[in-house]
Amino acid sequence: MEPNVLLAKTTFFVLGFYSENFTYPTFAPVEIPGAGQYVQLLCTPGDTPILGLGHARTNIGLFVKAILEQPEKTAGGKNVSAFTEQTTPEKLLQSWAIVNGRKAVYVEVNLETFTALWTNAGVDMFAKMMEFHRYMDKNPCAGSENILTKGDLGVEGLLSVEESFEVLKS
Image (tube, rainbow, N blue to C red; front, side, top):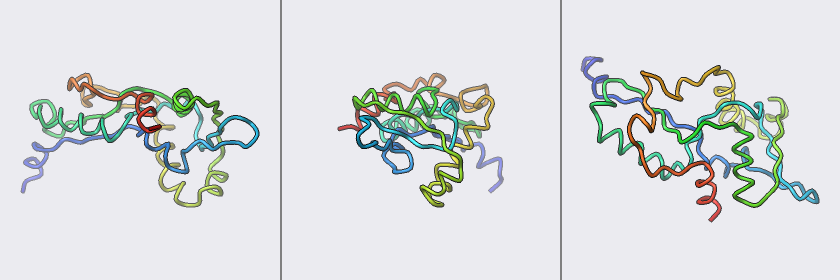
């Protein structure tokens, strides 16, 4: 098969940060006994721009439906960026704290400390993901003429980051 034939049928689908990531030990806020609050330790600055997908189980399907229903917009090697909002690690944590009625503090640790805490699993999976966001001056996946977003595709019914934390709480 010619590469151009396959490309004509292809849509590249880039997913934002899942709220479900907060259920993994490397991202989950940890209660500090006696302090009455939680802490989240990550190896990236708290103000790093991140595209939040919200609730993956709900939102991915809504994006895929829009992609499949609009091949005239999405085929031909187009990129679709699935996210509900632009945020940061610190804002994600504060959204989690509000929904859960907790106080929380974001703490940036260096890569060596993060590795000591989580071994290679944390580094291979989460540290590299955060590093990707950290070194993007302006995230091209936030939208451009070559990257389609929820607005371009008219995706409706998406759960925001905060709504996603509500769903995960139950």
